[in-house]
Image 1 (cartoon, rainbow, N blue to C red):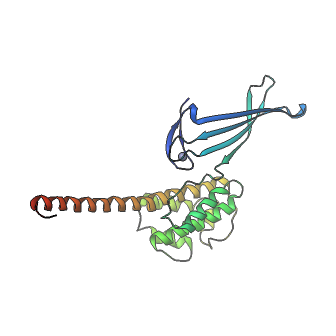
Image 2: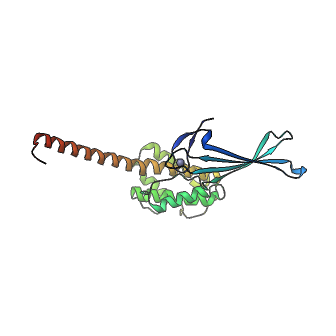
Image 3: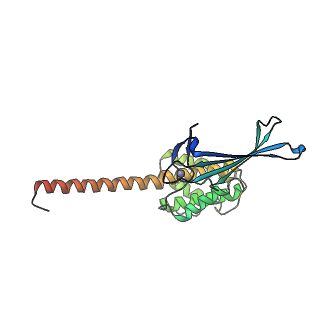
Length: 231
Ligand SMILES: [Zn+2]
């Protein structure tokens, strides 16, 4: 058994083998009228030696009379508590906090999650692009000629999704009714923007400055070769 899996702690895609997964099973017989239930705790230990964190989930299945698995009744991801991906600390703390909290409450309170996500989206546009217009809808319009059309279309399309879009013209702190899927769509958008903007820019800067350093080193070596007495 080897499955492809991305660790929610270190975000590294890896192949998980049987040594990395532990199952703890229990069978509970509840009163006849409720049938019998099978609880399975699944623990995956991240194979990345720098991480080794545990991801734990609990599934409750109703079993048939022969105790073969029947139907899944409940499933909970116990650890980590939130499905938020880890983002580097050069992204402003406030933006990461809003994003993490939006992930944490996505299912339990999609409207609070969407409210945090809209604030997070506005925070990103303001911080990364320096656009401050007051209303999120105006800020997105201002963004149009600054970014690639595909990304802008994605951001703009959120405006047409149910209640999220309907309320973008108002204050971002306004609480609105949304479905968990809509809240998830906003979270996905934020993850994409954090990756495409902050992380890509940071990595490009790292590579550029690495290139400059490498060129300087080469130049020094050449100078030393030309003038071997110089030290
Ligand atoms: Zn990991």
